[in-house]
Amino acid sequence: MSNANERLARLEAKAEQLRKDIVVTTEHIGYSHMGGGRFGMHPNFHYLKGIEASTGSLGHGLSLSVGYALSARMDKRDFWVVCMTGDGEMDEGSNWEALMTGAQYGLGNLVLIVDKNQFQIGGTTTEIKSLEPLDKRLEFFGWDVINIENGNDMAQVLAALDKLPKPDSQTRRRPIAIISNTLKGIGPFLALRALDQVHTDVAYQNIPRPHRQHPFRPDLRRRPDAL
Image (tube, rainbow, N blue to C red; front, side, top):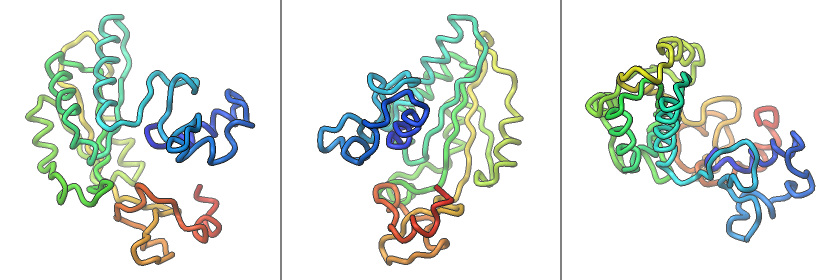
């Protein structure tokens, strides 16, 4: 869940896995990591049920997934291990170490999905650290690549997932990377464009600012259905 621990904690409270009275205010969740609250913006497996690792730091998910895929091979169990990263997250060197390791062990039960919206917290991925050509780089690191032209179209996403072979932990083969080309902030509730204070749906698309800033309150009142 990475930075979405506020949502995760509230869902667990709704499912009565956590006491509701301790997950009700922003003093306990959200930015409480700066004020000593129990539920910070990153999930802690000591406090939340149903998660196997404390996450949030970029670049750890794929390394964990490599370990899970190797564990499946040792246990002779066939299932997919699927990891999703952002394209900005691919700046992290640990991801490329994990890519090499997955290819080295021929983890045919491992899938990486890259949400390629070409933005990260400080700007565009091209400006900060270009990944292009991402598909060729992944192939060079020993992975097969499936491209999704429009990752905002769930029909295309499902079609790409249907192309996956049956998971096989015992057969050594190239892991699979799916590059999902997406538009950041598309949909009925689009992310914040604080720079010009425009409150229109189209103004929310393709900007980095929403990564670290809350939506305007008028937008929250206007589009509560999208939450």
